[in-house]
Length: 247
Image (tube, rainbow, N blue to C red):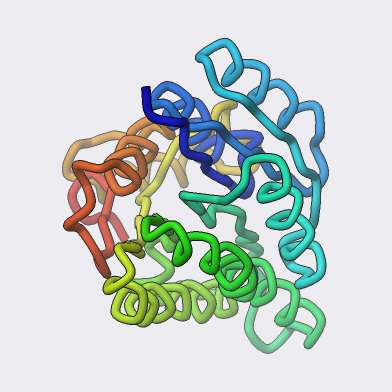
């Protein structure tokens, strides 16, 4: 029986990240669950993944800090030998008028939403190159396709992630490493949205041809394909999981 590969999922404690952790555990991966603050949520999903047969590791850390990115990768590699699949899922999505935004607020969003994917990819790619196999999945979202008022740094960062995806796909494809992006549309969280009004949710759903918000497990299904052997000829793509084009 082939050895289990290892997947590192940032923001793995809840919602899309949690669904990816459990889906990849079910697919035969060992999983590293990263979170920035809610250790209990990360430990909980790791426990669930363990029941699916995965060996697990929880590493808390702020992916907005390069030194934390390196530490997360180093601890993962120390335990499992390599990170075979990297899912850059953690993100911040604050909303604030452009002219009211501070430099610190700008830098914080860029560091988490864009720079983290750069530093974690740099830390994990050498092991993938050595093994001659690897998968990187970056999460972009509709902010990488459409501009959104009040979310300028998020839109800029997610456009950057899409550019990073295309560039790395070309550079590392010859090493049998694929790099792709997933763009989720409106996705219902694990728990009911507390800050979204009923009117806002109705307006969001009205723009979705399927007439509903998506589920984290439906986004995870795309990630499971992209990191699988069967998905090995998909490279440099942005897969939209959005019910048909919601903005």
